[in-house]
Image 1 (cartoon, helix red, strand yellow):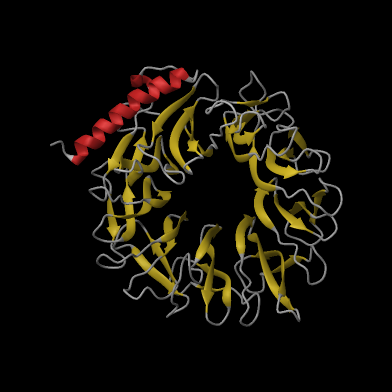
Image 2 (image 1 turned 180 degrees about the vertical axis):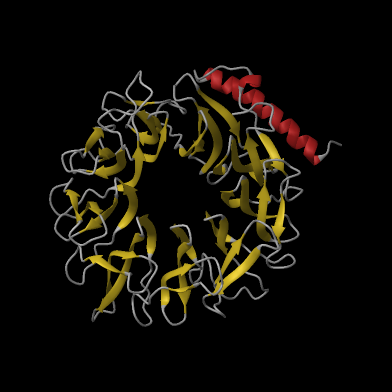
Length: 515
């Protein structure tokens, strides 16, 4: 009888032969199998069909760190150099089969920061620092000793780790005196502390999206609340800044005057300013900018005139390159912001802005009959790639050079109205990867595929397909690792035709072809 590993290998070979035929039949690059990027299993971390379910990837000093379960130690901290021999457990934070479950892994100032558990009772709110070795992993603070049920389904654990300069890391954490408030660390236990009880007493300020700008960081939080007779409450979430000190942490501006919140989110640094969305109570949720001062905080444009708001979301910095050139346009030496919004006329579409009212405009009305919902905008080779629905082809990959005429459907992966819903656009060298689905709406399942493109329709090709069906995206965690793409995917299929055994895969050096 063939071994499990042999069966997996045969399935992968069969899948690769099928992908070439499928790509050809769809009119995409009909390349020989040897010309397709070679997908390889890095390591079967959890032998058998259970899967190690790797997640939370981050790269530090040429090594990728992540969380995985080998079936013996529970979910713990792992590392890989992209080879089977170089993929191993860093430490068993919570000894034995119990989960240490390291989460919010972030590489900052030469170290890893994360939260996790080191005791059987799973209590506390612990901040860890690591150099990537067991001996170099230390506990910086337990911000809430005895806290029970921390994590996804309980009180929040430390997270939102953000470097402020070369020696300070900001983060949010829960403690019994202040609630969920801004914290900082210099990488030592003695230098780890709450910055300020921004919302005094038992209430939480819930700081989000620390965004560095010079020697300080902007963020959203609340510092006051109004309780109503019906039992509801209004939390006044506004724009704040911090330099890591109590006196240097304060509200920048009351954008929505009074007790109502402006709720600033979607922060991005651009042209020596921080841009974000907020509601001032007059214009609805629109694009704002700040230099960190009250006087320097203002509305960029009332894109959807009146109180409805355009709801700008998911901004990225992009550098568009005119056709036939190798450099960004002369008038855009510092790039432009690209985001999705609804101006009240064209629906939810893709917009661009240079940070001024006159420089903020619609790129293209992709779906004249409704919303195109452009998502996942990612810059690649002087263009921006994203998913959108033009009302004819379903949600498919699109590309834009920042102009209306240069905004086009890249490929109709699932012909007609059947969507492919691409996401996780990821650039590795001269390659752009993304995942897409083939949906079976009758059975509420999908089959996930990994695609690669050089930016052209002809150069868009299917690379890998999960072996069975799934109830969600089966290929995840696309991670840039030098010239290698790491990702997680199912490695087998069960008797019911569903994908199982999620493990770590790679495309790149140490495979048969390099990116």
